[in-house]
Image (tube, rainbow, N blue to C red):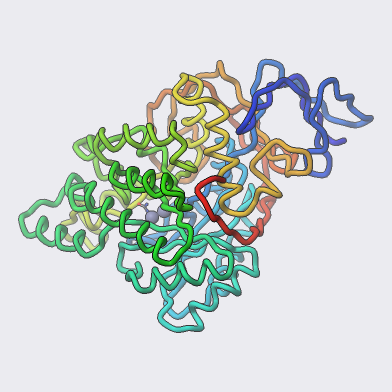
Length: 467
Ligand code: URP
Ligand code: ZN
Ligand code: ZN
């Protein structure tokens, strides 16, 4: 045995118990009481600490070309930051180019990620072009590479129409893929944008208004209907509105395999942020919604109708966010010239665990949302996402008594600000192990660039809402 974590309190999605945990060659090899170290075993005393599976962030955009620039964390700084927040696997989006086969898109991005990643990573394909059969059929080739989840965008200029979305759903059902969707009504959003700009309504509040609750809710309902028509499952990413929550709950109650992800920013902030002085820093899609939606999302988390929490980490610098005032070409800016997205990769697990520590949800539910369910949904449960013998030793030691006020200067990403500045976090990860290797300890990154490995996922089939 290489590592023995002794005397900790293990937290899984289902139970909490005191035990020792042994690791060899990057895998969990034993869980039990009074495990004895072998000669040369490193022994870590976790007395008084929680021992958790590392989080799996199912939604990141590292080094992603978007909004006229590239998101400011690359595969090294993004995964370094992930490690320091207790996240040991990230699922990043590969945006398929027009006319590009999906396996080519995957290989193109893997070349970037492989030399840089500090923790393990996997990909979803952002499907942008299925206008030719060979492009649609390439979903099958990329599934053979272990990339088994896809995302379609119902919004943005690179998004797809309902017909293409439907074809992707049908294809995924056939080949064992899961389709995720960014649900916002593009046509109505475009109409509202044009109207607001004509009326001189240019600040970040109007980003929210042009993508308000109904814009998202209508698309959530339509996406669920399309999945039902295609007879397959659906994963709604970054769910942020009550109408969407209600539609997901109803479909699940009727037995349909509809799953939803939400993000910490929708749980902690409301649309009030778009009235702040630097409202542009909070511009992301979907935008934060009103309190009614926030409450509905928390209730759905407690009920079990939200399956996962992920970050949608897509950071931009302050100077780029300022393009909402003056564009990079020196013209007058507006809410449409602000790159969409916020940083969060280092804050997800600490924030959700902090809410658990305050008693809002159980630690078991926090683990389920951030680690175990993403591993099941994306086909990794034979490798990651739980504290079980035979799985990767992706482990976080958590101190319930360590309180942290988030400061961007203490985070490990590359961007120059965070929407989480000043947030008070009750309890904090104090160590992260990735496949048994210590990558973070007491506020410091101690891992290595390039250590992270590509994780290949199983094919997927969900027949009902239970995972
Ligand atoms: O604002 C966001 N979320 N930017 C990243 C792209 C997306 O829609 O997920
Ligand atoms: Zn999205
Ligand atoms: Zn996203």
